[in-house]
Image 1 (cartoon, rainbow, N blue to C red):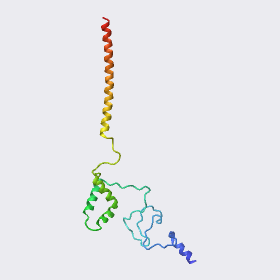
Image 2: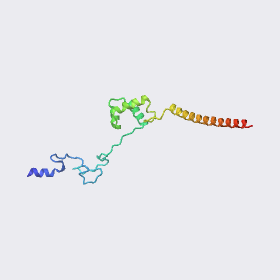
Image 3: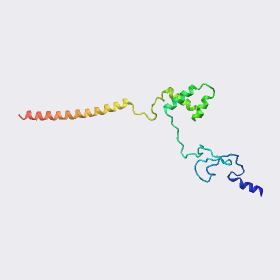
Image 4: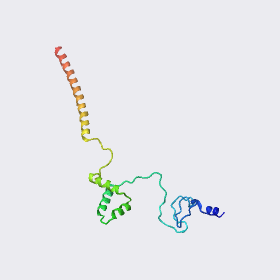
Length: 162
């Protein structure tokens, strides 16, 4: 009988006991749905605690070229052991990201060049323009030759009719 009462009083955690000062989850606070500002058992208000809920669709972080350059300069300025790791933790970055950014800087990709599909080659564009212009000029020449031939025939008819 005593075991049944203990199981009933332990709540949603089943056989495990809640630790002293454990945070109350959003599901246990009566369904308010917002961030919880109190600790279970202590009754103290704790300001500034973010909600633990995860959004449905994560958003990818995007870094500007200026930010990348600034971080790389800060990393190069780190002299004491562990300071690079502390900087990476503070900024929420991985060391592999630094490696990628260093490679991009070396290749000149951080100079503000846009990524993605490149436009057509300017030589190809110029070639297409010249081909189109050439076709138009050939058509104009054909029309001019046709008019000249008609004028010759008219002139021949008028000369033979005299």
